[in-house]
Image (cartoon, rainbow, N blue to C red; front, side, top):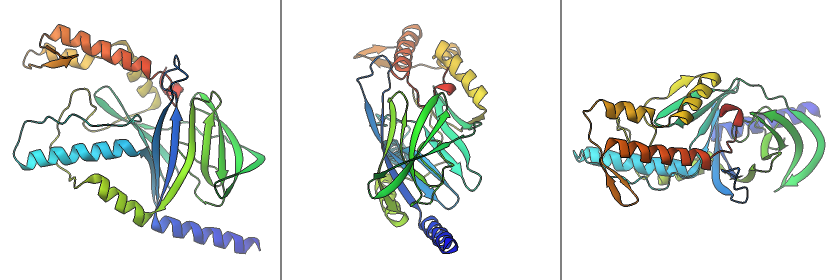
Length: 301
């Protein structure tokens, strides 16, 4: 009997991988620890394919696709004047990829104008508990883990045979449908799933005809360029430096004297480099303060 069950689970897993599956989560979090009553929400995707998964914000995906389509259209028309206003980039800028079968996990994120690829170096030491309940139509079981500076409670189901979950979480004997940290300021809740063919249709619709280009366009205030591979310790060092001086890169560029910029701040046009730097520094520090409750605080000392 056990052999039959194992065969069925293996067959189901192979079938789901062949099709591809998108798991959707409602992510609720408190960005600013000083304003715990202010909660943000984001619809997150976990796209699972045969060779791995990707976890990311739907809104950021749509925004990036819209931007790419706009830029490609301008380039094809021979224009060098870009005025894309950015649209709504969402509230979650990072993504996480996992490679199967070893579950190598990488965080893709940015600090200032630079994009980083940060390989996870910490194991997931789960404690599986006997408590069970129902989520949607699935029976789930409780598990806990200390990870990234937080204590998390997860609910996973063996009825969906993926050892994966939201963010970096993986390694349980089934898909994680819910997670919440002990402070109650970060939580993920299962919001549905789609087969691979349905995923393809949604992606094609959201991309609105965007195509790739070899041209790199630098946009101030937006991370761009090739990702920099760093260790977690190197990333922490970069974050500390950015917190101490968030306009360091811009200051260096303006000091070269061969660049003229205009900045609009509250309806006022700024052309003086010193005024611009002060305005940018103020904005960046306010943004850091408003986003003080990172999902993985161990990476952001």
